[in-house]
Image 1 (cartoon, helix red, strand yellow):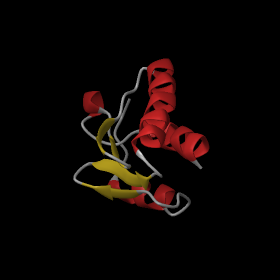
Image 2 (cartoon, one colour; image 1 turned 180 degrees about the vertical axis):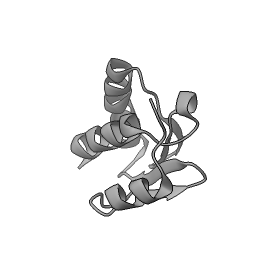
Image 3 (cartoon, one colour; image 1 turned 90 degrees about the vertical axis):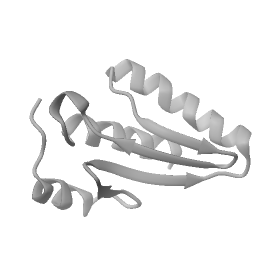
Image 4 (cartoon, rainbow, N blue to C red; image 1 turned 30 degrees about the horizontal axis):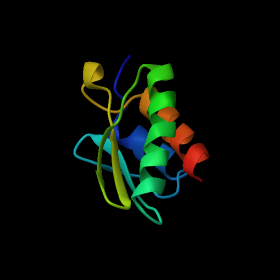
Length: 93
């Protein structure tokens, strides 16, 4: 899979609320009511990531979840990252 250009990434990001591009990855943050809600969201995302065999880089501190998506094999952002970002948006809404 080939990495997208920065121009291609920015065009696609125009249609995605809450996502940005920095340091070679798509990124977003979510804030939940508490740790349980954050962890529940991470669990739902984990099942979809495993299904796609495409796993996020993420951090969680209490009620905050920060997600970075890139395709390491392509050394950049690919369609797989946008697919997973769309799924994450659908799951968390």
